[in-house]
Length: 291
Picture 1 (cartoon, helix red, strand yellow):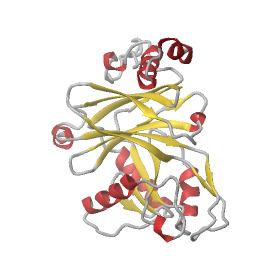
Picture 2 (tube, helix red, strand yellow; picture 1 turned 45 degrees about the vertical axis):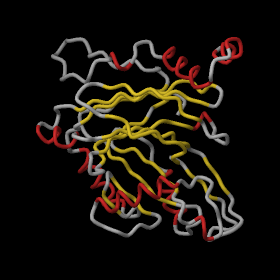
Picture 3 (cartoon, one colour; picture 1 turned 90 degrees about the vertical axis):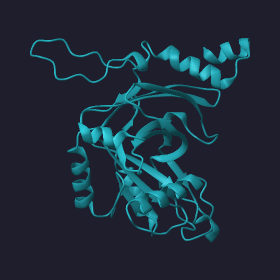
């Protein structure tokens, strides 16, 4: 329907996408009630943010871990790590992301998913934890390097993160894909869940949103993986940020450009918040009825 409106009214695609996003939100997130304490026995459930019912989510009272795998199609030790990450699904415990770095591109094969900002992010995150060495595949679990193949340590790190009260509350929703764009809304607010520690952690904090895609495949004809069939999930394709985080609820509404080769049925949105020192304070991913 919105495509027909665009043709008739000649509306810019971005404007149309944002209109479509608002159309699908019966009640804007910015007016939604924040997470409330547990209701008394017999009381009615608290009202939830009413994003597009088919594609929305919000954080709980505990932190969700962000599992960031830095990888490359030019690295012959990366496919096993990619397969491991693909076995994971976004949950309330952990949200996976695959960042394809670009420093392997000069060695024979250009990774079409490689991003300069992925390389910059990896270096910044590693430096923030007092190290200088970046490599692939490298897993950062909520800003701490953990060997991806050591599942016991990965699980322990996730439990450690989940045990902490969340200093931020987030809700995220995705609109319809229209004319090469998709609308996304991230609502974020610093909370009092962690007391004084929350105030310290969220001072200068910033939020980010990534458009992530599953079910990707490549067949390199050069480089270390020449002749192999490479499959990827949770790949970061587009990023928006940094976005402001305050003790007042802020709704960030944007229209993201969908990569021309992307399958709209395989994309999701991931939001996260970082402290001023780069520490990940929480994450959330859209959940769609068809995923």
